[in-house]
Length: 494
Image (tube, rainbow, N blue to C red; front, side, top):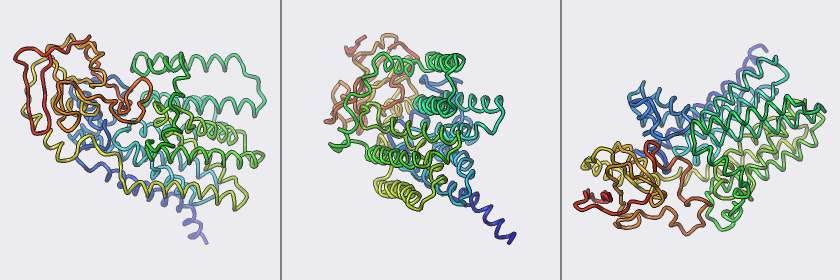
């Protein structure tokens, strides 16, 4: 009997640990090619190298993940491997707070199943991998915040405020979009909790919310001015977020399949769980009710198909986080087989979607293996004068910065940028993209509608170097330098 009790007690931990190991190794296997999936993989390499060599970032950004990657790179003396390791391990840290949330309830396999749903989620495996490491690295802190809010009444005031504040601060220095997710959860949690306890909103509470918001805005203005500009633009013109809604992208078949499936599952899941939560409302504690309702509201809002395609990829990709938290609590509180079966079916369908999407794998890298080898050989032939900048299509600018060790800018901003402070400007032409013209290919040349204020292929990373001010200067000098390779040409345009 004691041995059976010991087995039952150790089962949640051992099953959860096994799931974590499997997910880490599987995720690492997705990045074994020379280049990371997506367009922005080399961005992380450049940032980490700059930290190690110059003690500063090459592009202004929230720094925490890059410091972690730099620490791993310093230990391994290998920057690409350090970035790959961080891509596999940092998201797996979600297992710790998920385990703490799920083990509150006497269902032995609930922690392991919940961890499987998160770590093998198609968003984690096929959308974030390589391209969005900062996004996925901040998600464990959001789960941790949810656990802190769920156990809010079990701690003293000082302990819970310090834990919540520290977690929000960590997210603030990791990723802007995930910070918005955390603040949304916190705001709705506060509103639901006040309503549950029937407490009047005090001026002190309003003051704390206003001061916190101003501090976040100030931090963004100082650390990442581009993110602050995005925030102020949205506040001044919020209708922009609804231009070219996501449902059109899904209807006409040009939405990212991972995000399209996530939107559908999160919308249906939040509605279904909302119905169950309403039926179970009397069984929730104040903390559980606050976390459940705030999580469901945030899931439904972030995965809304009326959000414009300029925003919905990143927002919808985060929606599964609060869905998981609410799903764990509602499943544990459910009293009928039907409710638990339907919640389990939602998890199974999500994992089946992940298995189906695994056949196509993660997003292809910016170059194939053979073309990357060619580009590396081409880079060895290039000798740039001092104070040069290279203009390239999005994705290639970061790879150019990595191999040519130079300042770079995206061609999407070339004609509207002032690069007059540079002694020489070079244009990288990819013979297989846009032809060998003396002008960069348009980043918005896709036949699909471009997002408002940007091109269809524009990523969420800063697109130009922050070291120089960015006027039109397209007159090639006489005797311009030209470097010609098998597939790439580098032309001096000034």
